[in-house]
Length: 108
Image 1 (tube, rainbow, N blue to C red):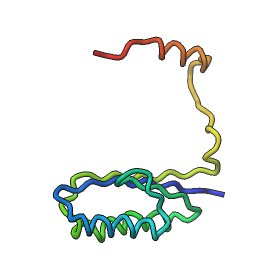
Image 2 (image 1 turned 90 degrees about the vertical axis):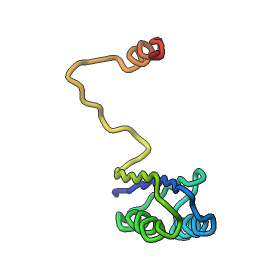
Image 3 (image 1 turned 45 degrees about the vertical axis):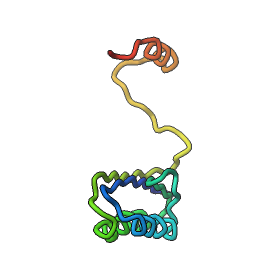
Image 4 (image 1 turned 135 degrees about the vertical axis):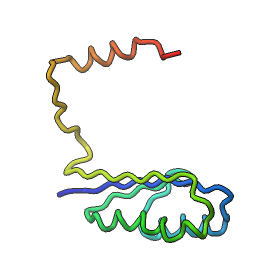
């Protein structure tokens, strides 16, 4: 069964606090989980349920203030608990690759 995972992050310049609170409460009432001040996530078997989140933000945005940032992300999977196969034209040992990359210095 396909599951959809949605993530919404938003920011408003000079936001109206009451209207911003109304936006957050509406998302929560629609089943979104607040994971940070203006970050929400939801998983559902229905893509329409996930689309509803961006609809709520779009309809309330003008009441909140000037939208300065919006990230909306949707992923689908039959199983979010395991990784899909990673195809590569070269065979690498994943553990050795991880160790090699982690030993590198951060760029200046």
